[in-house]
Image 1 (cartoon, one colour):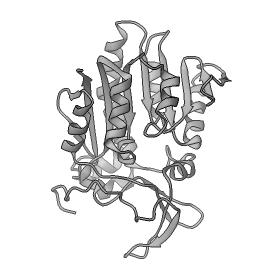
Image 2 (tube, one colour):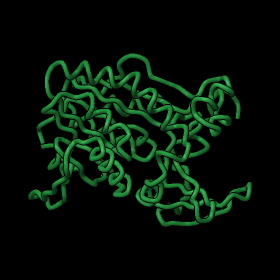
Image 3 (cartoon, helix red, strand yellow):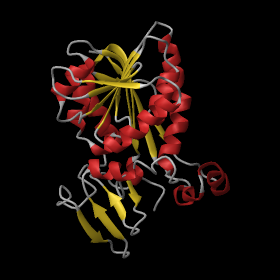
Image 4 (cartoon, rainbow, N blue to C red):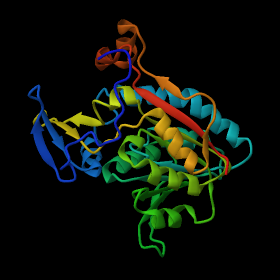
Length: 294
C-alpha cells in the first residue's frame, strides 16, 4: 500500500448481499464470511480485547491522552451525564466511570448483547456494584449497575427507545463513541448525537482511518475454521464526517487526530505486538472532538 490515502468510498465494504450471511473466497484464497454487525460483534466479543487487534490499542492510547483530561476538566462543574454510543466490551466505559464524579450517569448502548455482557462484567469486576433490571413503560429492558445504565439498541433505528433511556428534551453533557462510525449512516448517527447533546457540550468520536478503511473493515478470524468474519462497514473521508456533523450543530474543536503505530517497526511491535508490522507508517485511526454550537 502506498503512503498516501486510497480513494474515498462511502459504500459498504461488503458484498451487496451482506444483509444475509454469506461466505466467499477472496482473490488470495482466504475465506471471508459476511453477516450483520450484531452477528460480527456477538461472535467477536469473547476475544475482542485479547486478539491483538491494533486499532483498539491505538484508540486506547488516544483516549487516555485526549479524552480522560476532558472528562476530568468537565467533572469540575459537578456530576455529568454521558451517552456512550457503542460501549462494546466496556474498554472506555470503565475509564469514563473512573474519571467522573459521584452522581454522574453513563448511558451505555450497543447493538451486541455479547459485547455488552463483557462490558457489564468489567464494570462489576471493578467493584462498582451489583446489577439490577427494570422495564420502563417503553417496554425495552434497562439494566442498571450503580450509575451506569445499559440498553441494547441501535442508535440509527431506535430513536424512541433512546429518548426513553436518556430523556427526551433532557440533553446530556457529553457523548462518546469510539470505533462505531464505520458501521452507521452519518446522518442518522449525527442526528442522534445532535439531538441528545446539550448546547456547549462536547462529543468525542473515533473511527478507522479512511487510509485503511477503503480496503478493509472491522473483522476477526474465526477460530473454528480460520474464516475472516466481517459485518457491514462504510469508509468515510474525514471531510464527509465533519460536514455531516455540522448539519446537526456539531463543530470540530481543535485538530482532527490522525494516528497509527508509528514509523519504526521494532518500536511498533514492542508496543502493539506482531500485527503492528503490516501497519508501520500507516494512519489507521482518526478522532474528532466536536462541540455542540446550536
